[in-house]
Length: 192
Length: 226
Image 1 (cartoon, rainbow over the protein chains, first blue to last red):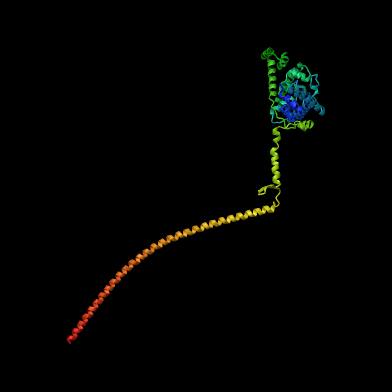
Image 2 (cartoon, rainbow over the protein chains, first blue to last red):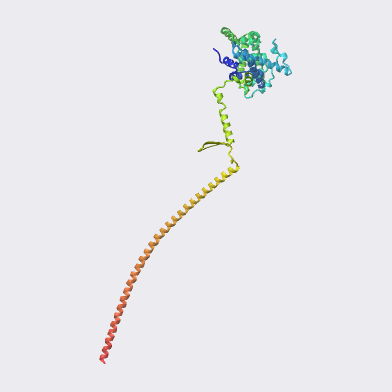
């Protein structure tokens, strides 16, 4: 049974612009929301989304259908989020959180975004604003795990595979991330 | 104070591969351990907060269609039935606008149909002529209407006058009859009076004659006597 994603990928590879558009429409909202949570602001989320679809477009011929298209596209989004955060890190002066991480992964050397930038998000979504400001306090590696586990409902095995670390590390990071978010949440409640 | 099992147990609790037995064991401990229970509740609360994310629609963007078409060429683009028709309303509007702007006129005559673009005398002068002709006809109509109203007024007046006169005539005739009757009565009465007068006169004349006759007899008598 060929699923709809695979059919659309096939048609797009044959040059159907309509199939491409349909494929993009199926995932654009999900990738955009992922971008909002990972970057904390609308313009970076849009950049992320466009880069993801550019990456998908450039690598469409490499998609073999042995994995689900959704997993494939979220893996691309994951990598693009890391790229964007890395770029930001080099473009802006370090915000002094470099000593914050205890993990041996390179990802943890990338600082979290200032919660001020979270203010840029649409104020219509008050809950999202709170979540983004909480997530922005996490290092990108933990933020990505929270994203994959809570919002993408991925298994720890999948996350370990995506991030190239052990399952135990992923579990530890997830637990640490939740604990940290709990503390951030308490701080934000105490300090309005 | 804390529980040494907290991290280990809660780390596993969120694992997807957790067996039912292990899950029950963790829950049994968590429910009996004050520290683990507090931590567990808070972590669940945090997860619940995150799960409250409101899905946002992506703002309008190009979707990389331009890039796709550029790199794939437009030749492969598959048009659906509705794709072909999507410009129909716009096209029809454009054609109608052009026809309007060119002042297209379609007329039929004995020679057949004739389409003309941009009429020669369609100008301000033409429009003014049309307008003045229209004004003239309106004026004429108004005048005619006024005349009709006036005529109706006149006929009404005549009728009224006639009715008044008729009424008057009727009255006059009745009056004349009454006067005539009166006169007649008077005449009869006068005749009566006249006849009585004549009678009286005649009677007195007769008396006079008789007196004269008596006088003559007396005279003749006296003459005889002499």
